[in-house]
Length: 299
Image (cartoon, rainbow, N blue to C red; front, side, top):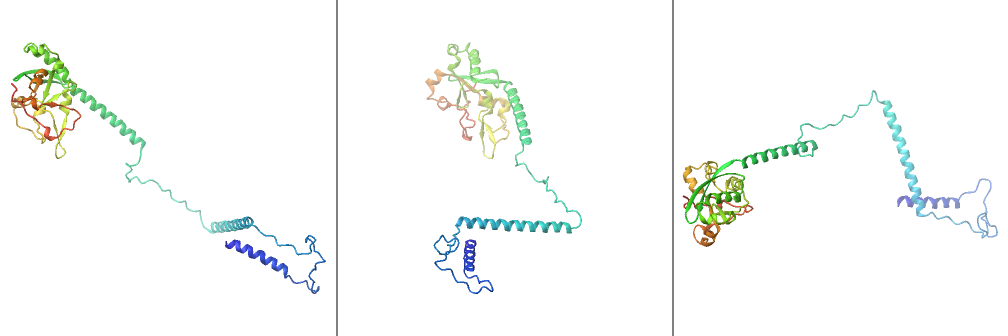
């Protein structure tokens, strides 16, 4: 706005100067032209020419031109000063030192493609090792003692692998019990139930799954939900410490039961069948579900 006002005042001053310009010396006073003497450019009317109005666009364009001229003049002055300074200086100019990385700074949180690839390879290698170890454990044989329960206990032993399913175990148990129990020989393996620690185990669950089922304990510890009669699973209590129990007591306490479904349907209202409940592998069991003992019927 200040620039615009300045331009307006300059134009008015120029008009005023033209109006009151003094006569040249020696010519005396000049008479103002009258109406009969039209001047040049008057259009034949005899009146003085009207002052041309400057538009806002022209004023802004002129202001832009002045700013560019001032900037060009300032740049030339700075260049000349810089040249003078360089000429006055003694010796070559020093180079700015290059700023590098600090090797002592921890950059583990930053993305690193090479490190990520190494970690991925390590995880894959450890996963393969773990799977190989689990396959080795599943193939290990185990002498599984069980009791065929028809109101009383009849103890038997079968050698199975830890990776065998309950259905495969019951098929072999049926073959073993068929010669001694007529109701077993006349039925199929699907009519038999495997009861472990008051839980009716589904036929598609493996012994390995039962051995690996853990229950969280206070203090960040874990314990096995199911206990078996061999030393590996009976010498550790729910507190993570060794228990002083003889193998004979542990065998009687932890014997699983093979039960005919017809017997269970007729006696599920009486002890011990009234305590049995289906086992759900996906259920988050707690400490209160540990070690449900009902081995007094074992032989």
